[in-house]
Length: 174
Image 1: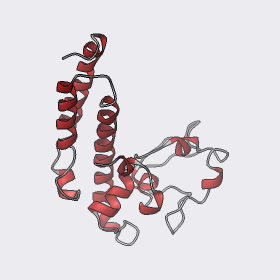
Image 2 (image 1 turned 90 degrees about the horizontal axis):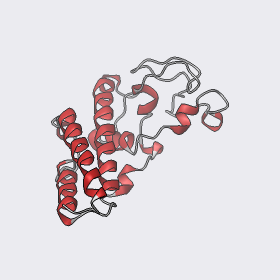
Image 3 (image 1 turned 30 degrees about the horizontal axis):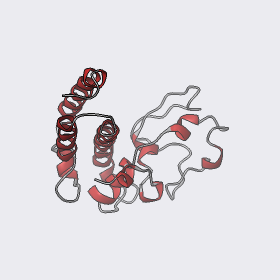
Image 4 (image 1 turned 30 degrees about the vertical axis):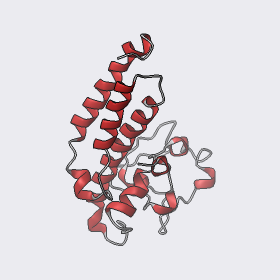
């Protein structure tokens, strides 16, 4: 997996963050929004109607948000460029895939950062093994993504990452 896949490219997405995520009216968001409901600022061409003034309009949470490339990867890889506006029946599946992909990308980012630590080869091997399990052999598909037991993967990766603290205190030895 290349790190470019973990960079947001909203032009390749279908505004999944603007429809799939819920938010409550707060200092971060000027209004309430339920998951599955398009943001009131989303235009018919799936662009943000207030993008240039998000923070001033009361949406600094949108400015700070990143899906780490999950949105475009779901749209382009799992759904072959199709979107929920052209085919509303796709929305529940796209939302589920988006949530799973966000978790997957978060784990990949954590492991990638861990790989930069001064760790022994045995720890680096474990990181590589985790990363291999989080990446399909070929293109990512909706089925591959949905077949992952995300809670178990998250637990396993987080336990491993917590185990690194003593190794780092000992100078990265295993």
